[in-house]
Amino acid sequence: MKKYVLGLVVITLLLAACGSNQRLRPQSQSSSRPNHHSMYFYMAANLQFLDGYYENAWTLYQRALNHDPGSSKIKKELLMSAMYHHLQQPSADADKIKNLVNSNKSFISEDDELLDAAYGFYSALRDTSSQRWALDTMLENHPSARAHVLNFLYSYSVLGKPDTSLLHPALDYIQNDDKQLQYLGSMFEAVDPLFSLKAAQRLYEIDPDEDTAYNFARLYLKTGSTKSNYAYFDGLSYPKDRQIMHYILDAALAFESWDFLNRAALKVLDTKDNLLIYCVTAAAFVERNTQVLTKLENSFLPDDTPESGYITSLLVANSFLAKSANDLTPLLDSISRCTDLENIVRFYMLAYNYDLPEEMIPWDSICTEFVNLLNRELPEGPKREYLIATTQAIPDQSPEAEARYNQAKEELIKSFMQQDIYDKDDLAWILQHYYFSDRKEERIPLLRIAIREFPDQAVWFNDLGYTLLIMDGDLDEAGELIFKALSMEPHNNYFLDSIAWYFYLKKDYHQALNYISPVMEMEDMPAEIAYHIGLIHMRLADFDTATHYMKYASERTEEDPEYSEKAKRSLEIWGN
Image 1 (cartoon, rainbow, N blue to C red):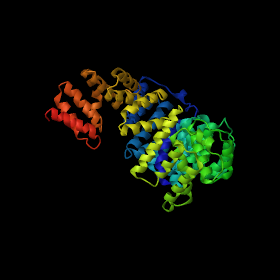
Image 2 (image 1 turned 90 degrees about the vertical axis):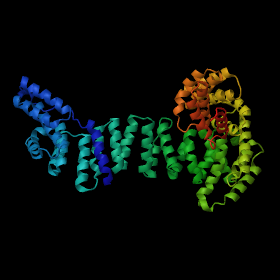
Image 3 (image 1 turned 135 degrees about the vertical axis):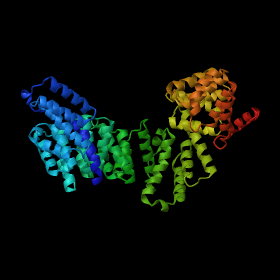
Image 4 (image 1 turned 60 degrees about the vertical axis):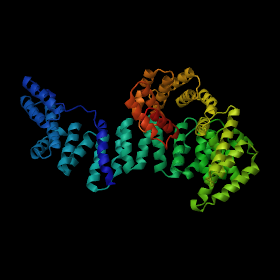
């Protein structure tokens, strides 16, 4: 626990804004008689104080006080500068300053800032009895969050164990100050997590945003028992409390709080909100909660959200595991992403992961059994073939199995596209697959679909534009596409290289240089870009730069054998 003390001390500094009581400062101004001399020394002292020269400030405040001995303002600043001087130079004037402070305790007790400084001064002296006096006076005359935090720290330093009840009143003084609640909540989490939850709950109630909701949900699952947690959750109402319900359920899923999720499941199913329902499905599946799974099967309404796909996958996997006679066609027909089919396999295998240790799972026989089940229960088609290929690739890591998997996935994605169904991840996969298979011409129509369906994806505008450049396509169209990508990501090195290559092909070498220049310091530069830089500089007769980058490209044999070979040929032609 002691490892937290330094952190708690730092946090008390952050609570300083709460420490100011709204009482008026000591009202002895009536006896003050300011004059030219006192004002001069007072202003000079202020400048020294602000610059951190506390000893000089102390001396000048004393001279000001000599000319206006009735000024409580000057007296306060004198005491502050004296105590700060000791904190700055602990070995200097300690006895003198202590006598000064002790002789003015009555005056100090009426000002919260002086009391706070006095507490710090006595702490530096390790004068525990005077520390106790400062704290008791602070709590009686100027109660605040900071005073209660200091009281907790003092008790902890003396007794060696935390008395968290001393912290609790601080929460009342903070009230609805969101920043102070956050600081205090961090402190509570170290020493009293349950009370930290109260701070987090209040913070969420006054500022219900994503961060406060997540923090409250995290502490809610971390600190309470399932019984008390569920009592709070059961008191929430849908849709008014949808946000906090989601964050609590999502945190429970992350923490694998299966008991809590299973207790909350029936309430969640009644919302018919797939964003919430998907959180409880995994717990029902892992714990084989047939009541929840049966109700889910009977009430589930698929939609086009990722959460709906997740639920669908789980229900299909559960049907296979339970050897249910239910017709799976409606659920399978609602699936429109490869990920959801992959999840069917994952969920099916997950059931065995929870039943047996990893090293004891007979994956070969399980996968064979599942493939037989798929062949028997599902109609022939791309979805069944993809499920089979995915399952077979688990125990079989051969190139042949990978090729079957890739072919099945390609056919499945094509079948989706024939139905005008386009998923961003599926398009990204097939575009990458065609790229590595050197099927550049087939990528062009797919890229046109990609920018039509996902016009916010700059990478695909650049990809299509650059592909047109290297495939002898329409240069003007290619340039427009790449400029579109740059309008979304103006500092992307790959996009800048593409437009530089566009201007190179247009024989505008100076413009090409303008765009390629920011790319020239790129770390771990691909050989293709280095090759472009070399050719652009060669056209501008900068042979040293051209040769430098071309040599770099020629050395990247393993990463890019194609452009490494091109660079070597260019160097041979240049006589290098």
